[in-house]
Image (cartoon, rainbow, N blue to C red; front, side):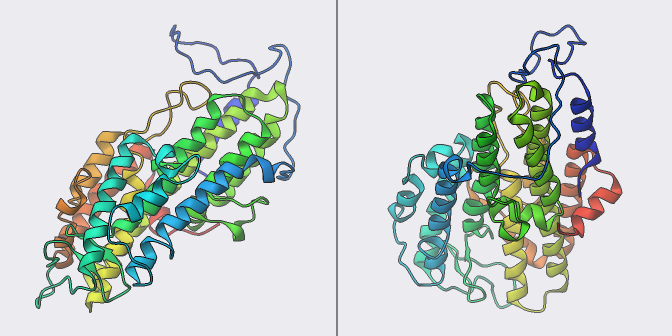
Length: 389
């Protein structure tokens, strides 16, 4: 599902001259689009199928970061602790894998999201220590005690605010919290086909861009119908990066990649919020309520991760790292009772007995995102009920 708003930008830039765009408003702060070659030449490269001969060397760092995230949130650490397979009883059990590697996940995480991760770690140790806990009272209301705990249904670690904190680590880091900005950082220097390979790997693609071999943000992009458009933009960027005369085309394709990557994450948040709303409305068991809180946590973490995202100092994303603003993100968090500075102080858990209130919060969040991304009613409906691809 390629966005016509963003694709039109790519088309206009690629049809124009390869030299820098004219300054139409007299400003002197035009975005540096990089080396576009001889200003009198025209780009003649015609992108063909994706082909990545240098993948094994150009993606070493990106693939290592993906593996480090898998270790932190997977069976070896956080998920394993939820399931009782490994022991996590102190912060060092989590900060160790977070700080391991070169670069480490800690290094590539934005300062703003680092604070969220550290808060999530503290909540996680507390709730795992509490162990399996019934987090609801006899009337079905949220009653997490002083530390939260692990739900008997699905073995999910919920903090006192009703948030599954592991999701804030995993989903947030492969979206705006770490992998997205680290990929953008690569566009500030010389952009080569190897650069595009590394961006694709950080997104979660495989060497062949096979949609069946996706992970992390690429998986959610596929679920929302954005995998094919992003893969197409990556293919164009890789081809243009090999031709010095195609700087403008290359940069336009890269902007398209990141705009669609961001859109896909926001769209997934809308989908999960809608799923949770339906679960709250029709819940017949505590397991249904846990499912709703679980899916909601995934979506809201994706949105929160883009807060305070700094743009690269140069290149096609200079001054334009993202579309959504901090104020818009804060409006969404407020609607759902999420406290970004203290996740455990959130009031999201109270929605388990207030389905109408949650539905109203969903409507507020959708309105914010509709305005942020300039969505039509039909496009917002596509986010609620996406077609994968």
